[in-house]
Image 1: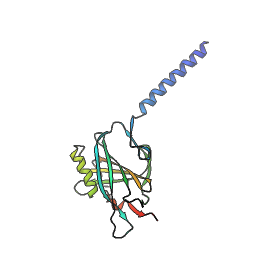
Image 2: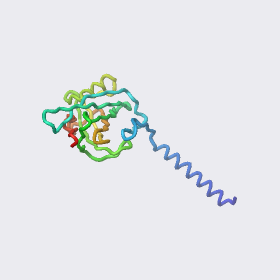
Image 3: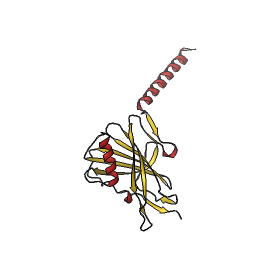
Image 4: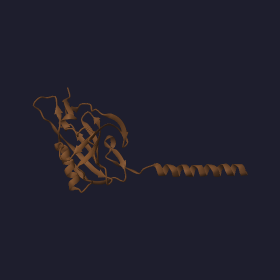
Length: 190
């Protein structure tokens, strides 16, 4: 091989090595929670701290009917932020969820509808009080105020996946966390 070709190959190897090193430094290790369309990819520094199921009242078009479902949660924390990775199904097979609202964002390997709220632990909804009690009982980062980022999406007409991200030291400039009946509506499939 002549000298020019050797220098070119050496330069190419150096550039490739440094490019791979830079890419490795910027890629955060992740882990996947759930399977298929219910999977969520979170940074690997979040550790599992337990599970929780909460009964959630739903809004319905049918008068006199107050359906409930359950938010089944796997809970993770990185020492400050607490994630409730959740799944909920319609309570009856012929009930469908109405479309959700929020800002379109991409996060954790999915497209979501995002809404941001504040939560004061002394004045919150029955559902969010259960999350606060879980945080207390598991000695996680406690605060009197949290910012709650809600990421949810319809996986199918009868299923919702949601991630709640609780960060201590919430802001009062955001609306208070809503009751589930203000967020989730079911209707009979006709």
